[in-house]
Image 1 (spheres, rainbow, N blue to C red):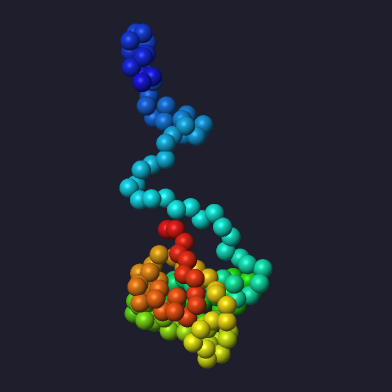
Image 2: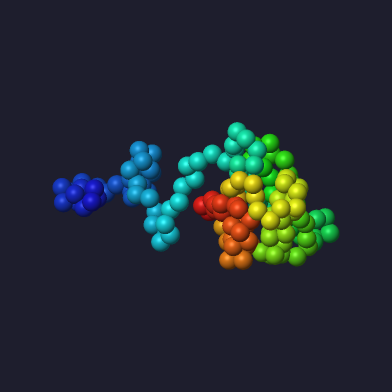
Length: 150
């Protein structure tokens, strides 16, 4: 629009990259549309008491020999204690995550079928975490399943 107006007035045009850079500096650009709904993480992960929110995530390590090791862990967001973890040279599956959940519950509360109070189970949107069987299993024990945005 600026260049159109300048052209009508007989003035030289301004470089479009310069206009973009100035607009970006002054936060005048629109948010890019990706087609996905935006979900912001506006809460805090850490808690002030144990057994209120547990967090789980996966990571992979590349070994010197070129093999890859996949690791999943569960920790309490208050004391940051790793309650349970698994490692495999294969991909982490939903069944492995369900075993991780069960081991974490056993470590904290012993052999129980239901948590004494609801606990949030926080994870990302990875396939093993959002799998139907994993969500149903976690909810049946007494977890409130929460997923962070990507």
